[in-house]
Image 1: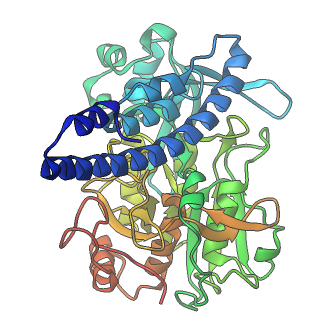
Image 2: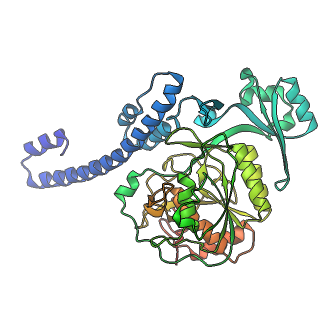
Image 3: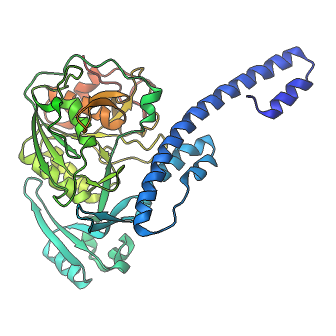
Length: 458
């Protein structure tokens, strides 16, 4: 239906040419309106789920629940993505107790700088004796001192008094040499997309060819995997839990990613049928809909996978820039192990997501079967490649199969391509070889939507 003011103007015009011109304009507005309605429908579905999640979290704290949907519907089209991102980031309460399987509080998750999340008052710093003495001077509680031998890192995890729980305050009280090696124990999230996208974009025909049949060794940092799923009867999966036995480990996301990499069934052909998959489970449940992984457990997982000498690590997760994580990623790549990461599902206007945005990490965005960009995919100069990530058939943790969407589902395609690559261990050499295979999409050359282009199975 056209806006009322156009109807009135058209009714008053006698000049047929003007009327036809305005009618065409009205039709174009109708088209924009329909597109906006489609986007808004997806937004409403995402926010509905977000509101349910916030309600669950807020009940724990007996705080009033906000209405993010009302905020979304007051925005212009240019503001929708940003508002949805804000709603997604804020679906969890600002202060959220993380409960163990007995219902006790394992730790408290809080909202921190730039709307990211972290373990309340927990920080990490590279270990040295002067640093330990400085921590003692501010009454910091030392939680653990850990040496990660394969990464070559020694870290102290500590808790500070509430008045010191900020970068600004800690920099006032700690020696200058610690400032560049200090950061929060941030929280990271898996990058599974809006299920509405699978409805809007019908599934592609199931792939029938693996990417290669080599006996490669690959790593996965994700949720746990339902290794009892029929799709994994022929798979070589070696799992280790880093989130802790106190939690009922979520399994949905990791099962879906592993299904794409190594899952076998009548309808599912693995990318890497002969691979050995070393799977690090790092996520704990925040609610029925959300999971989180602490930064320190990402470091533990990277160290373990270096021990296993994997060729490439798939990280379909995202969160903030973190000095300690950046160093661990750098050391992993310097040791000869490639890292492929999901670009993020926070929308085209979102800031860079990490670890994908780190130098030498291969960042992957998602497209649908018609090579259109996934509507909620992050964009930016850090994007390296695109792969099919909308309505992808894979294994589900309940034991069945279904279509999943997100940059998480695209990343395994590039992970497999790296594993099958004959290039050397340097990130630059691998990217150069993949560029030769990539189908350039969007603007000529590398662009912030598709990177160097699309990588797919043969």
